[in-house]
Image 1: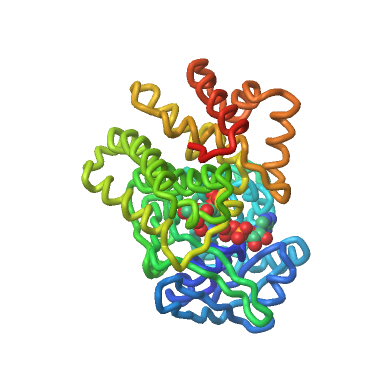
Image 2 (image 1 turned 90 degrees about the vertical axis):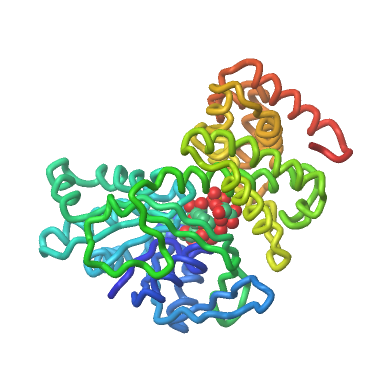
Length: 388
Ligand SMILES: NC(=O)C1=CN([C@@H]2O[C@H](COP(=O)(O)OP(=O)(O)OC[C@H]3O[C@@H](n4cnc5c(N)ncnc54)[C@H](O)[C@@H]3O)[C@@H](O)[C@H]2O)C=CC1
Ligand SMILES: O=P(O)(O)OC[C@H]1O[C@](O)(CO)[C@@H](O)[C@@H]1O
């Protein structure tokens, strides 16, 4: 069985490739980083180190890799011959891989190939639907109708803290022991494929993806942005400060009120989930740079995203958002010269002022909330003591 996976980054190596391999797939990775592609092809394997006290090493093999920018015809062949296609390239890069997938899917139709499922694993609600819409831009309406009869686009929620380690000999992924990969069974068409080992198949993905994005990702981003303005280098060092830990818990308690209402989650289960999430963030074997976790602040400040969406929903019910407002303010101060979005954000604030920037990036129109964000922003910007 052949799996084609786009994005040989942290989660692609550390989680998706590993579970596909355990299920019996030979995995071919597609990436645009030639060094990574060469490392995969040199050894036909890579390593996954589990960040528990034993630091267990798993070997993922056989694997191969293609350069998606330079080996387009080979990638099309990969699409034609794949039994499953997965991605983890970042939500904003799905448009960049859509054309090659579309070309391969059209060729599959001509060659009467078996049914196939494509799963985009990005931190976003309905990422696979986004990929499907991007693919539709490259084919006629009639061909898309035909594609949809033969190709499933199941959405998913994927959760595992995944990083990587430099090595001269192998690609090495670092992952926490916990993992969760939830796939919408109702959107699959290839029901003959073996279930992915360790994945959970559900009929309703919404509670899982929203809980993931608005708890785990929101809480992690909070630790990064609040950690950053307090000069912390890692999420773990930030959370070793009890005030910051309590603040992150406060944000999780706020978004919990949205999730509890929307999905009728039991309060105790939600609380257990929050404590489990915090203990994952504090894993002493993980050193997660606040610059990695806070990356792409423009995406993270988007209106459907982890900070703003729950804030807006809570406001509709007049529920507290005091903590969330502070995190939004802190996100505007995230400053990493190596992060394109961080640079753009900083420049926009400089050119247009913080009030316009809030409206532009978050789409928050409520004046009271905007003023509260500005007040916190100015406080964080102009003070040097412990900031929350
Ligand atoms: N790292 C984590 O702990 C988790 C990440 N995610 C999601 O997974 C996705 C990937 O995240 P990471 O693996 O952390 O990022 P990463 O930056 O480590 O990996 C992304 C990979 O995609 C490649 N890529 C970018 N554009 C491409 C293109 N056009 N064609 C082929 N490859 C391309 C990059 O070269 C890179 O190797 C994101 O959407 C993220 O939100 C989800 C859950 C956990
Ligand atoms: O691209 P994003 O949204 O920062 O996604 C990566 C984040 O998702 C997480 O896995 C949380 O699930 C973090 O490890 C990581 O910071």
